[in-house]
Length: 422
Image (cartoon, rainbow, N blue to C red; front, side, top):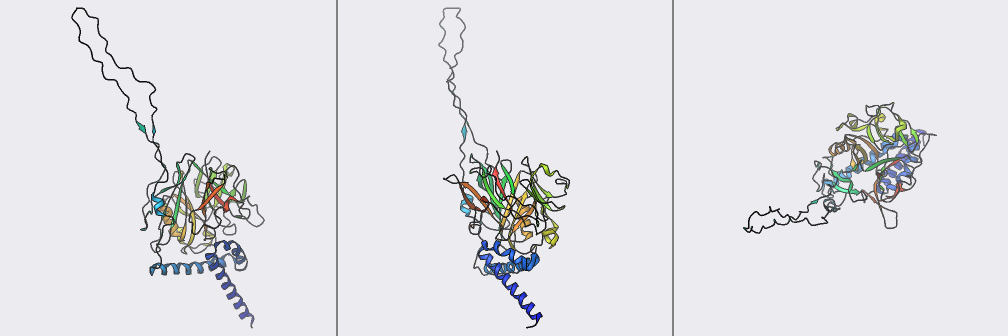
């Protein structure tokens, strides 16, 4: 066998192995973390990205054929009946009941000046106060979104997470942002940042640069308390995929880069999201006032508009990830114009433009892409159980059920968590 033929055979074999590996990942997502790095060592980041594109294109073609033939139908990401049924009851609080009965009113009578008997006066009726009730404040929610598809419940917000008084602190809904793919869904969770706090944790391995500092990978015990910790969700790309800035828990793993979408959490609890170098986040910002910072490629949405970068394939812009128009699991993070509502979005079969459309429709003012791929896109709530621990419930029960409590333990990858404010 000639050397040229041998090289060609080895290359074809490696590509076939890579495709088989990624197909295996789609059926067994937990295998992804174990196979991705060895494949990158052989094919490189761009080589792995190209293999991913082939796999995702095949998957998308199969799904489109299934729906075209009527073999499958679009489905809501959770039980719609549960979405449309109120899950919290708020009892009106009456005014205090009076402790004494008012004295009947008796008119005074002037002394008589003659002997003619005066008529007997009839006292006015006793006044009984009317007790009124004042309902509790309206539970926090958001206006319905304009549906982009035709699934029942689309765009209707429902209570999702609560504080210790039973008041909603987060609501959720979903959209169908891709007209060509009714099975493409974007689940959206909106958090009230007046009562909840966004936090960021660096992983013990990622994001980081070669021989650079890494994080601790765990939630501080003060926040990891039943009733205080509400939810966890995935972070962004690895350090090798763009060298995007990352700071957390006192560690600067990667310095921020100008022009890239950045979420900043300040020590006073404020959250900002914009391009690094913008008016909101100038490049000379005082990082000492920051609790955490995370970049992940360019802004997807800026000032309620999808950015032009969403429609290009620049390796520089998107960190050597897959084609902008390739559909796969994607996640994103957004903030409203007032900085009071945080949005997390995630779903299957999303292209970059579809994710941008979902962000824009949801009310995101500025938004960034987080991680992609079924192996890494993850969101779970953590509710107190009877034993004083947590019950972890994934956002997509059929897909995110593998280790829904993964971020309650030390993590090699970065992640975000939401806790109640003090």
